[in-house]
Length: 90
Image 1 (cartoon, rainbow, N blue to C red):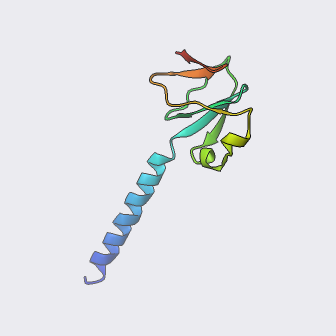
Image 2: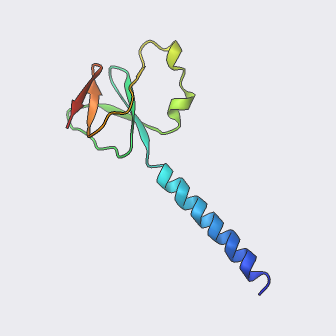
């Protein structure tokens, strides 16, 4: 009995940690052919738009200031995508 309670507490902590990590992993970064990149919570493909999907931490591994072809776009409310530097709502 003395061992069961700490074991259950550790198991619960591991389970909650895994749940937190799985929910955080849903965020993505997408980039279009023009080099516009932005965060998305739920990626929905658009048949006529070619987007490349990256993991959420990809942003931190890029050197944005040294690459004139890549442009980080800030969060935009609502569904849509960036095209030629302009937000296209959907």
